[in-house]
Amino acid sequence: GEQFSEFNVLILWVSPFIAAFVSAYLAPRYKLLLGISMVLPTAILSVALNYLYQVQGSSVDFPGGHGAMILFMTTLLYSSILCSIGAVIGRALSIKKENMEG
Picture 1 (cartoon, rainbow, N blue to C red):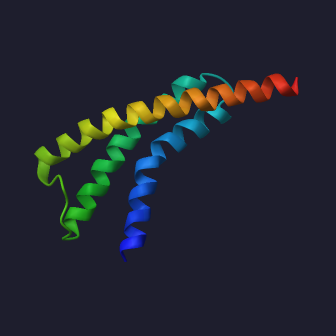
Picture 2 (picture 1 turned 180 degrees about the vertical axis):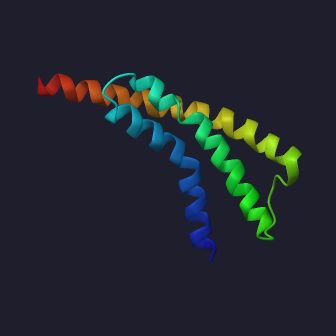
């Protein structure tokens, strides 16, 4: 019910940070670039999920093509911030770990 839906929304909003963090942390090189590269897939996925939800007959906040563009631009900005933070933290912890190991 509602709790499951709220959990899904939380995961959706936190996932850009997690994806960028993991990408930057695990990447052998170009850590920041790989972390920040999660921005575009995040924005595209949010529009696709919004569309699928709408097609299933559910009410969405941003319906139609115009709504999709608003959602895309909003998510692009939001995920840019989260992915940048996630990438910087992932890179910093990865470098710290490398320095401690050797």
